[in-house]
Amino acid sequence: MSQDDRHAHRAAQVTESGGPVHVAPVQPREPGPGEVRLEVKASGICGADAGMAANPSPA
Image (cartoon, rainbow, N blue to C red; front, side, top):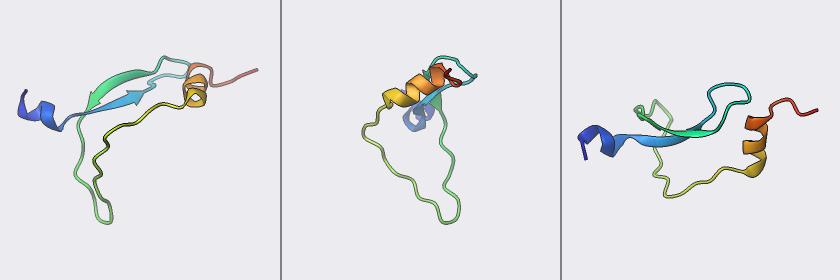
């Protein structure tokens, strides 16, 4: 594992309207004034959010 891999995070992203949700590595930035960094052990995606990403303009 490289030094960069240890600091990369994974993020669920939708990059275009109506596009799929995909997981991609992202590099964290340093916290700014008044910000903190949290260590997230687990997370999930709400089904309603995934549905909105797949169909942003329901009829």
